[in-house]
Length: 142
Image: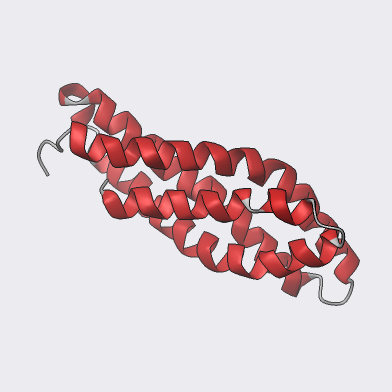
C-alpha cells in the first residue's frame, strides 16, 4: 500500500460520488450516460489494481501479527478498489451491452448510482485514511 493506492481510491471515489451531481440535473439520463464512460475508464484499472492488492494482502498475511492496522487498511483499501471499480466498470459495459435498447442500459446505470454514491464517499474517506496510514505506519518486511 502506498500513495498511489490512496490516490487511485480517492479518484475512483470521486468519480463514483459524481453521480450525485449527475442525478440532480434536469436531463438526468443524459448526464448519467455521459459520466458512465469516464467512470468505466477509471473503474476498470482501479478494480485490477485492487485485485492485485487483495493478492498482496493475502501474501503478506504475516503482517497481521506485527502490524494489524497496516494490514487491515491494506485489505480494506484493496477490497473497496475491487468493489467500487467493478461497479463503475459495469456502468461502462452497460453502454455497449445495451446499445440496442439504451433505455435499459440507462436504467441500470441509474440503479447502480444508488449504490455507487455512498460507496464513493466511503472510498474517499478510506483513501485519505490510506494516505495518512502510509506515513503513520511503516511497512514491515517484504
